[in-house]
Length: 346
Length: 251
Ligand code: SF4
Ligand code: SF4
Ligand code: SF4
Ligand code: SF4
Image (cartoon, rainbow over all chains, first blue to last red; front, side, top):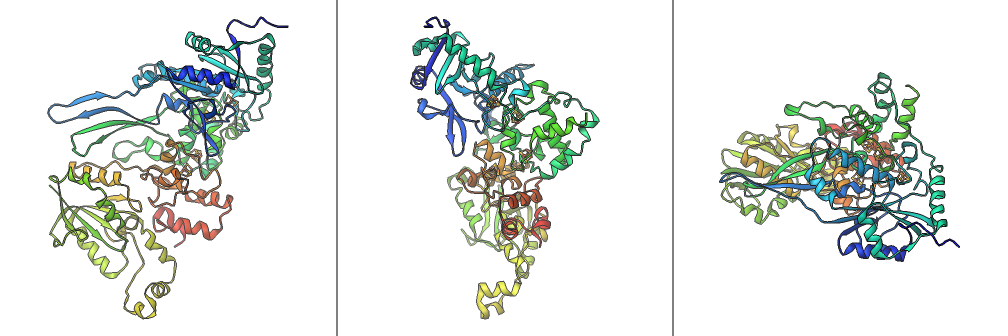
């Protein structure tokens, strides 16, 4: 009879997790994957019945909660001496059920938004947040390829609480921070047994062997002529719509644009930040109509090379293998097959 | 005071109605805006000059050609107001039929004798246009943006990216990926992805985005099972006359 589990490893079914959500809701808004049509979105939930922990992926990644698709940065008024007022919308948040790929993307954005300057808007939301990560027991579907990039399917750090489905809807629960430990404490879970913990190890070792999609982006991030001049770019650009869907759903794409909007009094107004995409014609447009990436091919190539790790963001904007851009590309352009074509040439 | 005029050619008046729908928003601007010509709401005579002319409708009769040139001559800034003025709009679907047949369908055999209609063109076929406001009708926010920009004398900030951007930022599922013939990837944003957000495909009323790829969309439509006729109908519906779509819409 195994009685000695680990001191801070627990076991929970969906009812137990419901208690965790209830405890958390007294302090946080809890966001989790919620069904929308055939897809999922991270939205506020009230209990476990609102969410589905077997979800494949959300349309927008959970990074949207910290780096908003659209937000007001400040309000201003111009007459009688200009005045500015910062607008930061913050609420304490728990992000529940984050996959390894998306968690790694959040950790990269953390570094990106503190690299040289601190982004106060991102940090205000991120600092007070709690992340409940969820291990994957294998690829969620045929689009996942985290295993070959080392960004999943198992989570190693960066969470407050980690869940692993060790048996049918039974979850091993581990704390990764003091806040996480306290929440688990209040939710009063049973301690995990040795066999529960063995089961987690077994899940992790089989999970990574089940992937059928594979990508190797090493050696593609350098601006070598074999990559840049490859004919695959012409072929794919013929199909590409320049719609931006691929980058708008990418958890490591952070590019944004900023613009001002005036109220009807033509005196006061506000400044907006909105997610942008290098696939859009206007992205590289400068004064007097100049444009650094006029051709669709140049834009598509730029985006993929960035995801290989070759743009200014380096590793921080590179791919984590979540599969969103492949699934949501209406032209069926597939970064993994483009990469394998390129790798034959380098 | 910004002196504006609203002029109508072949159209349904829906764009002008949208202007009316600005309602109390216009009240904020009463001391900055002089609506000097607008047949729908007042019987003021035509004046010598306007700072901004909003022109609704496509050009489809010989008299229209004369009138649009006259409006142009009187106006400092000319705005193609809505899909018909900007790209030919719904009116232009008759360009793909024999003119006499269309006249008979619409006016009957006897009425058709007194009608003189010509190919329905967007206004920029005859005059220079300064600002294009696509949409059937244009969104209130786009109308307000051009009014504000005109008063202040700067370039309005109108999206040139595709509907997909607004659609994805609203976190909609993709209809096209799910096999429905959405025009979103090749159509300019501005509507806030109104149709896709309600589960309906984008019909294309804002006209082409900055760098559209209609050939690839036609291929995609074939892949999801549309006939050649259905593909042509979708491409012709609002903006088949636009240079970006003309080749594939086969005028
Ligand atoms: S890419 Fe990996 S971590 Fe992300 S959902 Fe798929 S299996 Fe899980
Ligand atoms: S490039 Fe594609 S697969 Fe990689 S992280 Fe971005 S959306 Fe996911
Ligand atoms: S690769 Fe696909 S999703 Fe990305 S811009 Fe091109 S068509 Fe759109
Ligand atoms: S539903 Fe239409 S507008 Fe929305 S992303 Fe898909 S193709 Fe674009």
